[in-house]
Amino acid sequence: MGLFANVVFLAHAVPAAAVTDNSSVFTFENSTTFSPPNANMRQNYTPSAGTATTCPGTAGYTWQCSWTSDAFTSGQTMSAGTAQVDLYASNTNLGIVRKSQGGIGYTSNNGWTLSRPAVANGDVLIAMGTFRGGTGVNVTSVPSGWALVGARVDNGTSVSMVVYSHVASDASSEPSSYQWSLDTAVKLFAYLIDFGGLDSSNPIDVEANQGTASDTSHTAPSVTTTVANGRLLTYHSTAYCVTWTPPIGMTQIVDFSGCSQGASSNVDAEINELTLGAAGPTGTKTATSDTAAVGVTKSIALRPTTTPLTCALPAQLSKPIQLRSVASNTAATSALSLNVPSGVVDGDVMIAAVAHGLVATPFTTTPPAGWTLVHQVEPGATNVFGIFVYRRVASGEPVSYSWTFSSAVNSAGAISAYWNVDTSGSIDVETGGQGAVSSTTTTEPGDLLVLSSMSTSTTTFTPPAGMTERIDVASGSSNVASLELADAVQAIGGATGSKTPTPSPSTWVLLALRPTAGSFLGSASASITGPTVALTSVSIATPAVSFASGDRLQVDVTGPNDQQNCGAAVSYDGTAQPSKLTVAALVVSEGVVGLLFLAAALPMGARWWKRRRPPLSR
Image (cartoon, rainbow, N blue to C red; front, side, top):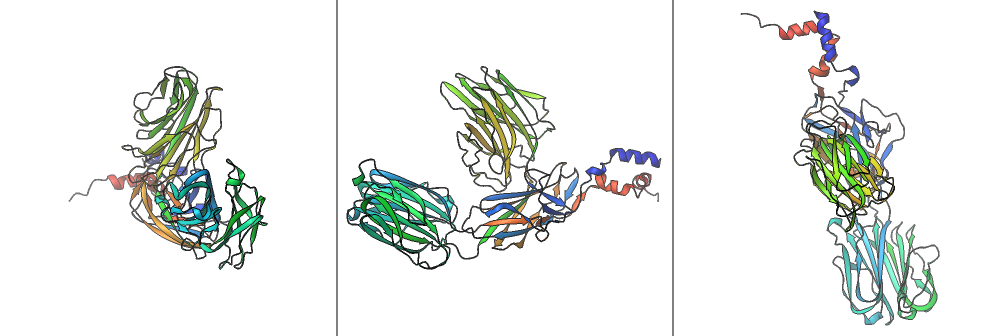
């Protein structure tokens, strides 16, 4: 009897290899074996390396680092309570960074408009304008929030220069462009530079300017800086079309010549920069032109951030959306068959991407029954190519599905299946287009971004940074359809940023899958003050959680879009820097693993009798 009972129990028990560790401490490990490309969170792990790994590899802002646990077993639970995330993090001043720049020249216009680059909170924009007419031309309007740097500099009625600065304190509210107006239409040149790492409360240390006589040498005056490690900008402009040689030791940013209507009636400009050391006089900086002309010059010393930075790093705990599996196929006929990915279970959310090469119109694509179109991009008039993305919640799935076309065409497609997705409202946001993949804005924490990219040439894609490529296939040698599928969890709702693969696709669709209710387990913000690595711990109130087989826990730490305060990185998997997650108690139900632990000590027959014996009679 006892032997029989034990045999029955062992036949239904979880194999020893599948018994999940119930340790509540998950230490960050420099390995990606659990859920590539994320680093591991390993239970019962003690780092042995003396030197820690950092994420990101280079400290900065606008990044996401994720650590994912091994898979849980069905019936395992986490008690309600408090999870603690220990982060060994640093926050260093990144120094002054020239991030982007651009300008525009006019042969005759009464003002200029400069497009806004992609800016972060705390960026400082420096814009210059130089124009013919000198004192006879007035600036009549300046965009809101811009301040004149020093004074306007004129050289008689020949040429003038103005330089303005602006702090992007809230990058999300910045307009798409900035416009200056003049009272007279003249030849002019304008240029804008976006700097990070400046003291946003006082970005200009010192400045000076002067007019220069007709000559081939044009000297920007010396300025005496008051802080170390600043950045010197020199501006040189003439009332002529010339070619410039920058001052010795300086880096030329731009050399503009507006020669479309005669050299002697134009305006010209050069901008240079130099990284400074100790505070003190910079010395004069002389640029030379290939033709003598009257000019104007300006020297500006930019002030770096000097105070210790404090960066707020959001740390989030979740059961992330996960890929079940993916299947793909290509065809050169009027139908494309796609297998249902292996292991799919009812309730999984499936995403199908179908791309076709160039084909004459009229042309139609017909999906199988039960699939809902999410987004399509099909450019062209008499000839078209395109990509179609569909969704379906798995329910009693067949072996495969077939998409049909109104005529034979090269096609490529893929179905990817995910779980922990909200089946009632799978799609949070979706968009599509041609060329570079533009940013969209998610509304939920823990969305999974799914990018389908199509090219009309035979190519092998490289996925966008931070995304994992799932499929990369191509159909045909002419009128080609190449398709890549890539995905990534976006921890915090908000702008996705550009997600452009290499090469840039012909068409693309980007969608965000919404996680199921209960997947988001909580978040907290870690306040990191630099520059040295230090331990910062945050507490996250978590609910009780029941895990399905294959579920994982994931910690996402996000560097916000805040260059003014964030030059941050997390150190982990080092003997002195064991960043980790500690959760409330993990429990495995007695019917799964607990009984296996007891089996060796307590005969099954005895346990069965204890549970099944009738109550004592009274």
